[in-house]
Length: 340
Image (cartoon, rainbow, N blue to C red):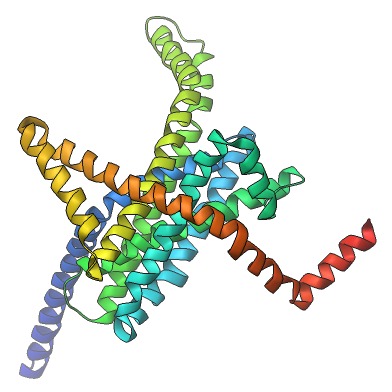
């Protein structure tokens, strides 16, 4: 074997080692970034099941599939390139965009509470926004679109956290890690959501099993427990999802203001969490997180209460005026009038 061939093989082996080390580093960074975004991931998983509530069992998985596909498009086709471009060209724009997204989450969450407390006023607000659906398909499309919009904000926060936690490196490495985190989180979240919403069907199957005791009795008992308990669990998860939207949105706003030097709210929330943690050291971490989440939730409620009338009386009329100027919109309205 010639010396040149041996040198070439040595170079190939060295390159392979570098590539393997790079892959290990990328995997490690992706895992760390995903862990840092875990809080938003949990919120995303808690929010999503409420979008399939009220639909037939046959439509649950297709709806989740549509939302999951929309989530992947959000992360990989829109947010990933946008995050990389903004980080290179205009990193100062990331914070205000995230704050706008946080405000939207507060609006969505508080609107749900508004609908429970003042249903008639909430119905009037929905009509003003032109969100009333006339048939099942329109309702499904509306729910899917709403879920994808909410997912977009949560995904933007996930991608921003991921990008901020990465070590300096090439844009290709960052893109690969962002894609890996986005894909992994989407699979985990929507796979988990699919399991949650179909748990009652699994329970029904177990409850009908004809297997001899004691195994059969145990399985049937588990099945009956799932069938009985899942409606309550989904209702509780819906409440958690609404609360999550508010405290995540409020937290984004608080941290964004802190980045612009308005740190009073962040300090108050942090100091309150520290005081409670020091008072009960045995539960320090849990209590600190709870107090800080509650503080962010209060800010989120205030922001949502402000956003509801602004949306109803300013943004929505402006949006309707813009849509009325679009030729395609006018054509559809003329066709609708002709059918009447």
